[in-house]
Length: 130
Image 1 (cartoon, rainbow, N blue to C red):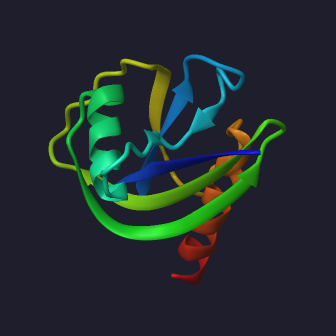
Image 2: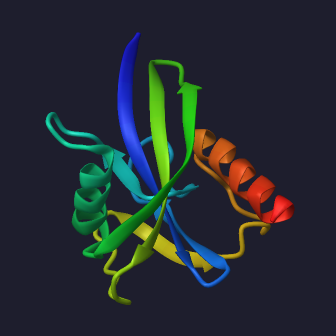
């Protein structure tokens, strides 16, 4: 089965995180942490900065590794490294997503892309455990 290696940004501002609504594909209309595929020769951090620039015209700083997600979809395996990040400035322009919003991590009424459910659960654990 094909393995896809990706990175995702958990962009934090104060006590909120940025989530984005997918604008294409099987999971169109569901929320995710923005990011994308790692290209040959890139570090995960370089890939994340590039992907966020391409998808949102935003400049981020990668702060720390949060978690790794291994998720098996019907036709591929996703290996996703997730990093806590912050915006270098307030500029965001959605180029690939239908919407983006700042939420508190414990907000429950979000329809997540399947693999990202593990990420939000990990974030919630950290919030509750301080």
